[in-house]
Image (cartoon, rainbow, N blue to C red; front, top):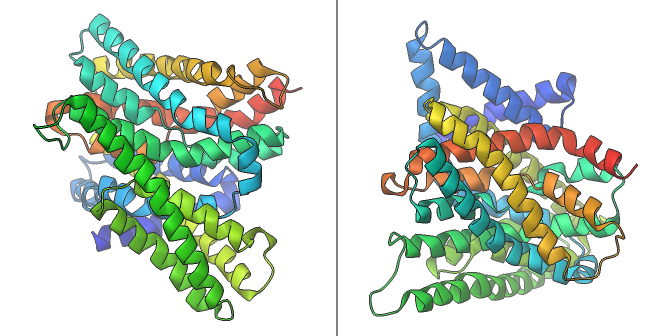
Length: 413
């Protein structure tokens, strides 16, 4: 695995250089695009250079995408993203973020699941309803962090920017909890015979979601106290922050609480209590620089892996048709799942349709969806779900990601 990771890291660094010097695309989109092109070329030449093709396939397989993301990269990305979130700004939009990260995810899960189940029946693809719900759960969490810089350049309101940023940080953890709950319903997840299904799902939510938030607060308070006590030693402060992420995330899986939620909460507490946004002082400066580099590195690795993993898909016309239909289904479900909670609250924006449209088109799907799809076994329609997940993720990043800036400027012009 270490060798595969090292090669992928080197590819990510090279592609980042090419993108910076010539393509000038948003980093994540440029890396994904180059990885896709590279893997397509390698696949087309597999009859001429079979050993070279097998070598690259082994690299992707050896990196263990699912484990690498869910047990490693995700913790760094969420913590890094949360470090510079202003809690006071988040407080102003707390109800919107709460509804988008919970109610919207649930609405989208069941809408997507139901519509995908119907669409699969129409085109003759066998996809049981509970498996369709699994797809709905893994595709509902959004990943708008990748386009935040583009949205800022489009001069969207501060209120809308906070909604997008806050939702993106919290709904990954909620999405994983919903996904795990549906696995229990499907009879695949961890459950016990002595408890009813409802009790098991309720217990899962309390342990994972609520437990993750409480655990994150504890990690954040301890991390802040430790870093503050060594503020004259920037290197040690960085080491402590890394230990909070790596050790804290590992312990979260042992005590069965949500690691993603814990990373978000601890990152916000540490970042705000240390006032990292000011960048004043050697310790703050080093923490900012190190975590910005880590964020870029792991984002690069993630999107290169998404592109290189395209070889896992075998062409099937029915699956492709279902995937194309799923693009529209997911966008419709996203619009409705945002509109309903949005209409329950008062907002600073006086143009609800425009705001919901931005939230819909800017709701990208990314690595978490692919990783959850890869975690499924053969008895959960894994091949079909992975195919349509990839179709949506590629459309989301390449089409929505490249056009969201122009879309936002046009809709607010």
